[in-house]
Image (cartoon, rainbow, N blue to C red; front, side, top):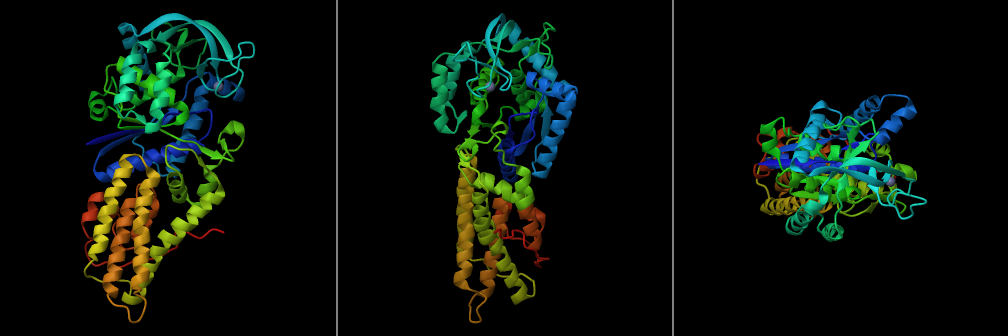
Length: 494
Ligand SMILES: [Zn+2]
């Protein structure tokens, strides 16, 4: 069984911000979940490096556009390393292999009659790298970013998007490709208004992949970027790998790029006569003080700050726990701290400390041997079922909610049995059972907070391998267990 997951390619005009981090952490969590389930996972991310905006930015710095792209793509790679992102491939659109695929696709579509030469008269927003329709032609502003746009009038190659209107409607109506479900009607309504063919080349834009037909045309940066999902797994050059992973099982995107991904992208796949992606999921935005977080608004939240202040895992945890994945959410340090203190410090971190202290005090650091309470075995099985269902629906916060039922249950179980009391009964069974429950928690939480789970398993005297697969839930750890050096992982923040 295979699982192919992608993030959008990030444009190298800016360094990684919370939006990029959000999508990438989510993709990483799913990739890890499916690997632990036993799937052969391919996780693709990377950088989008062509286009007029990059060219202009490089000119401002007085460097070559590729130099700018080299530098910023390296920053993305370092950030993902820091965030523990387990991608299989980081693709750059300036790679030769990718450029060859884009040119070949251009030729395939041209031969098929899906590309034709025409006249483009309209407006182009360099900031959004997007052809736009303006309200006021005398004072043309981009409808999305409100910046002044350029009027262009030039011959161009067009993609026959209109030809696929009916097929797109059927696809969206009858499959799961548009996710979450509430986005379906929005996309369908847009399509039903009628789709226009789209220009996919630019004249006089130097920084782009040259059209294979005429040198003075470069290929529109969005057309180029979308094709990474094909070239990234070997389309037209590594048949074996491509047929192993195609089609994508989940493609994660921000809701601002839905039209490119829910309309143009599937239309291109129809044109290439390939099977369609199974799910393309648009997540919401983080807002800060009621506005979308973006560089231009100056309300940027620095991932660096939260990583330094709280750690990588608490940051990953907050992003996926705080709000349902398809909706917008407010990012504030106050909310972050609340979540951190209550979930990670009080509930989870404390549970582990309590049990390790008990083992140390009562049994000299050795886990006693004996029977596990059947209630905890059963409860863990129920939680796993519930949690997997939520993960398959790309519902991260609900998955954690399900897992947290076990955290709460174990804390309560320990309170009720109170094995620290002199006259407590079943002391060994209580400790063994809670220990086993925590081991299961580490398996459940590993896709979300991998480093923490490994550290904790080590403190518990377990082999890292014990928490690597969901299959291990069925077995009890082997051998006599001696807990190891303890440290506090989550410190309460004031
Ligand atoms: Zn714009």
